[in-house]
Length: 294
Image (cartoon, rainbow, N blue to C red; front, side, top):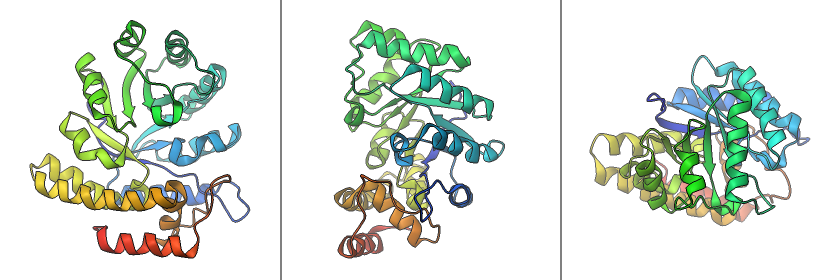
């Protein structure tokens, strides 16, 4: 386990220009701002980046942009795909660009068996000689890592796996990963459960709303780690009220709207995501005004 992998990592957006094309300069600007705010690192090309709505070339282009920061911060490339072959192509590109870590969701859609899913992770790791951070997001992948399954127990205790990005509100499972293999680096992946994740031993958090609320979440992280638990809990309540509003109107469209309002034009989410109407924008603005700590 890399003991330096801890803290608050931004699950970066993929900015688009007015024509809906990838906007590299906006990603650079957003990463610069997040670094100045205190980000420990970045998760590039994940769900917040609309990864499965991007072309193969666009996903690699985001890695290329982020790689300029490789000597200044910690970078994780999300390389997940349905096909092992494509995931390996992404992983090779990330490694060549100097990323220190790679991560992958379980392969989607076909109902792959635990043996097939484990082979996917072993194959990625072997192809690039790097361990993988498993992006555990069963709400979207529809795949649970049942740790009673010996295939998964072997996987998560193997050299092929570096850690887990636990995007699952069942934080009990997070604790089970830690119990199974204390060498794993564990990231809480739902912004709403940061305090719970830290309490159960997570080394840090990776979040979508950190793009526009990083200062607020750093206050939660620091308050918890400094023993100010009541303060951390109150800040988490405020953050969750904001998250509830974001999710009611559409999480990714909402985060992009707020980042634009903060002065970095990241465009709108790619269709079939919808766009916010004026009433939804007012709702988001009012919720932030009442709850966001800057």
